[in-house]
Image (cartoon, rainbow, N blue to C red; front, side, top):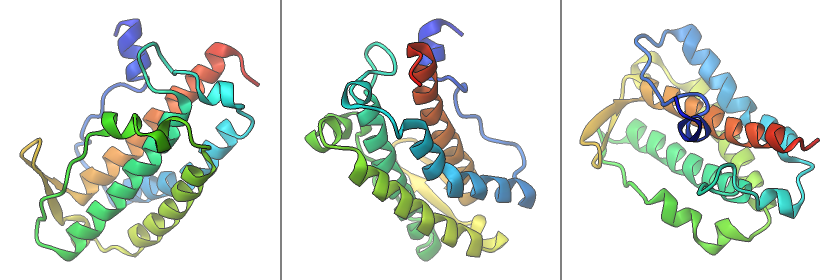
Length: 179
């Protein structure tokens, strides 16, 4: 993996796990539950200059990453709810890059996004903990990829997403030697 690829995908690209057993599901739910606090602890002392630093050349700033996480995870919770209440619904994709360029992502304080992440993850965790194995078999259709996703795979992907963006910020913090 070259340096640019390493900075883009510090944990590698998402790979669908072969078998997601109940123990793995519980581990995934713990990641969703604990992510807001982990993220808060990572960035709580960042100043505006640090928040406006790109995690890699040509990449988003930390501020944009935080706002992207809020946007993405709210969309994820909605997709979960759609899959639980409709038969294989077709989800609505969105242009993440364009959303990250909107002013609420580029120059707004991150506190509202962090509150959104915390609340979203609390609701998400509660819902995930209440689900049965049969509910985890439910699916939604992603029209851009023309593929159906079951909710076990979807959860594995969002655990990767949490850790993926956390690693972006953590690696930047180490690279810049920010305390």
